[in-house]
Length: 93
Image (cartoon, rainbow, N blue to C red; front, side, top):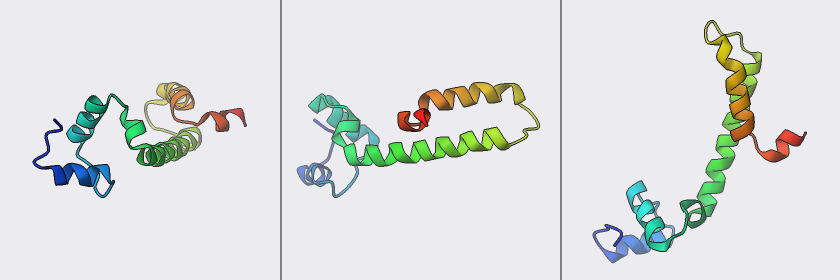
């Protein structure tokens, strides 16, 4: 069902000993009708935090830098980052 060669491989994924390849993870999602962010909640939270930190870093870089080209896109990029990458709690401060 998941496309794995044997049950031991599936067991390792279920016990979180190994991270499955993307296609297998998507097969888990389809088979269990549960989003990957719920199936791998701990990993998802860790990755989401890293993305938020990178988004904040990019925001600072865009705000303090003086680009040679693409100046007209900076406001658009900052708006997109504010809407998508910066956690809600930070927006209120």
